[in-house]
Image (cartoon, rainbow, N blue to C red; front, side, top):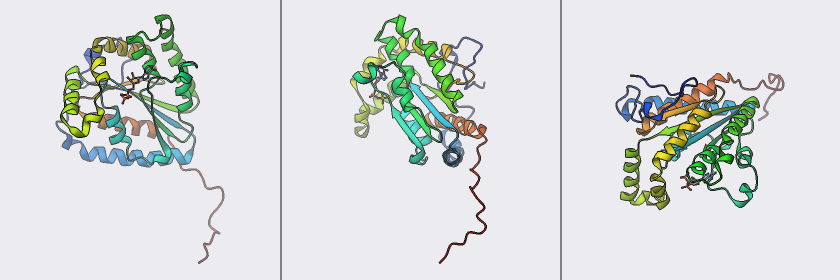
Length: 268
Ligand code: ADP
């Protein structure tokens, strides 16, 4: 059975209806390697067009449970893009300065200008995820943020930003495997933290918080993509394809030269 990638807008989303193991009919990584290479080359080409045309911006929002694959997605799907045109912004616990502003301030400052791609590795959605799960602010405060987020996204879209939101959907078992892998490999120890284990205990509360996000902040202009992410290669394939489709939709063109070049002669 095929599984929708875009979360439906008109019916209640239950994460249990989305299989994190789904592979779109493919069996193994080898089946998609060639396709992924082509997709990445296309992204490189389209990014150059975006940069030269300087008219649109692209914001990728990545959200997931710990070990969900945000870092891997950035490395494997976007890693070959010209670094001049693409920034990655990681959002951690807000600083005192950031907390002194409204919750969207630090994200707005980091949003892409025209011509650029920006990847949010975590985002303003943390302000209704970790903040909600751990009661970091009262419900009367975080409860209003879904609407603030929808309004913020609408404003960015109306200003020429395409927003692609990806929830990397892994199972609790897959997270366990990935944590174990981090513990068993010396080159991955640096990725392991006790905090990740503490957060794992809140799995169910996070799932509930994610479901609310997927239901309240899933709009026509900025829909959520629920990416089956237990298989890294399938995750990369669908995210890559989505980026290509979104950039192609912009119907970008290289800017016309400012004048006729035919009389220019480059002297020896
Ligand atoms: P990552 O897991 O993204 O690689 P870290 O391990 O440094 O990076 O985790 C960043 C931490 O910052 C996470 O625990 C996350 O919950 C927290 N964080 C991010 N945004 C916020 C926020 N708005 N409020 C509180 N904590 C946040």
